[in-house]
Image (cartoon, rainbow, N blue to C red; front, side):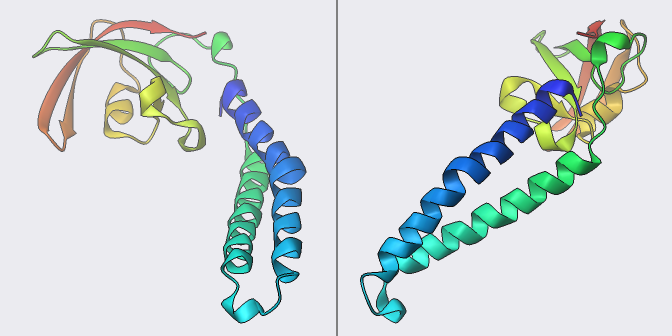
Length: 151
């Protein structure tokens, strides 16, 4: 995982532990004061939220404890994890830039491409100027690699 991805997950974990967890505990306590728990919607909603928060905390702790942080700035050469790759769609001439990242930090809207995605798998190991074929739900796509940067 990249340093930015690790930091984002670590911040989420801190927020869950220091803000979200105490808030849901207070909400459960308030809901209990309303009496009969069997028909108390606020209580059940707060318990459900607590369950989600505790599950996410465990998931983040496990991810962060096993994470290997890689600094892409120390890498070079063909496309690999951490590379920022600019490609052009050979049919539409549309350029897009993606950084190949781990599953936990992937966000296609922000240009963070999961390394297990079909496009990332096709790009890994290729160099600038190479063309790649990718099978997408919309059909076969061809991309040419314009630039590879490690930042």
